[in-house]
Image (tube, rainbow, N blue to C red; front, side, top):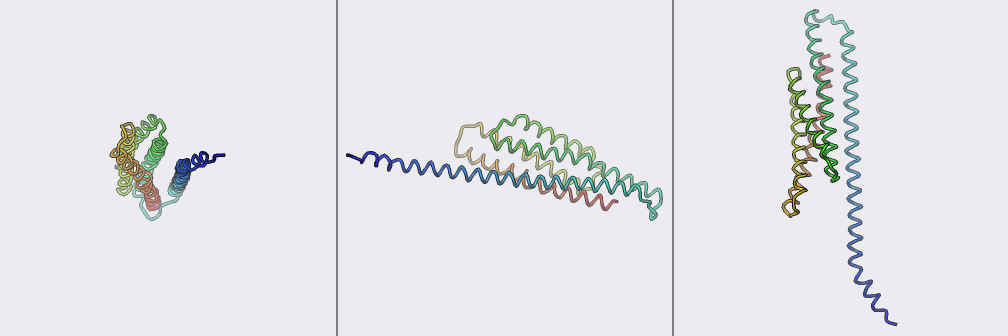
Amino acid sequence: MDTSLPENLFTSANPAMAVALGAVILALVALAVAMRSKRQSQHQLSALRDRSDTLWREVDDIRVSHFNRPDTAASPGTASLDHARYQMEIGAYQEIWPAIWHLHERLGQFLRSVDAGESAGDLRLEARNAALEARRLLNRHRPFCHENVDDLLTRIIDLEIKAHLSACQYLDLVKEVRSDASDHDRRVLHDKYHSLHDGDARDLMSHLVDAVRHRAIRLS
């Protein structure tokens, strides 16, 4: 009985099986890395949200204690003026922060949709509108913001807008015919918008929370 045919068939199939097995392993590794990155991003976002909530609770407590506490060191006129300035500055931050947070969240949702290859038209528009609204509120309240806070807010909005534009350019390149150059350009844009949003902008938002807390406590 001739057994050479099955043996040859099995031998010739080994390379294909090895390639398939390697592809499966690579896919599993990529999935694990993506899931880990997503968990880390969600953890950082949750931590930033907790810091923000704590900040505004502290600000509210300070405003109440400042209102109820008699100021014996300053004249009534000076105390009233300082209190009015404090209320205007903190009030400006309380209007601007929700818009900044909304922009960061909406842009994050848009970028995750882009990464997943999902339809992102609505999120793309929502992120753009959130950036315009944040810019509008900052321009409106800029005279009442401390210069350090103003600088942080301006830089955050600029970074988020740049991340949005980079993601839009990435989507445009995805639609083009594949080539070595366009693949490289896509990778560059992908890394760029993640670096701007998940790195620089998120770091500045953490500094913004600290800056507002410092202003609220110092002025109280």
